Image (cartoon, rainbow, N blue to C red; front, side, top):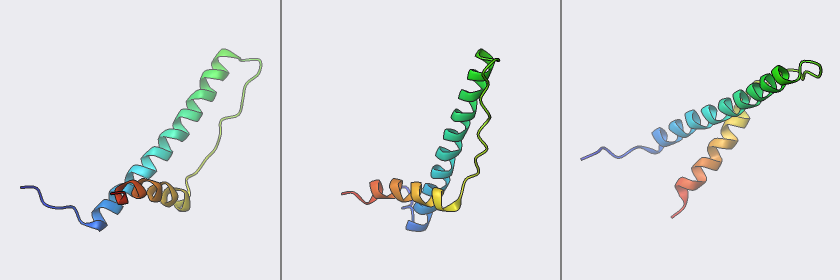
Length: 71
């Protein structure tokens, strides 16, 4: 039998997932600009400098948690 996951563990896992999701989105944007710059050396774009804020991670985690709360 599996051990039930506590509410704390669920929320901690959702925070990790939210951070990972946001980091992957940033990576996609940066890679997109790199691809554009490689294809268009005469009209390059600047690489976006984005740092995650705790409030952004919490907001995404809350969105994910709303799914867990659905019955």
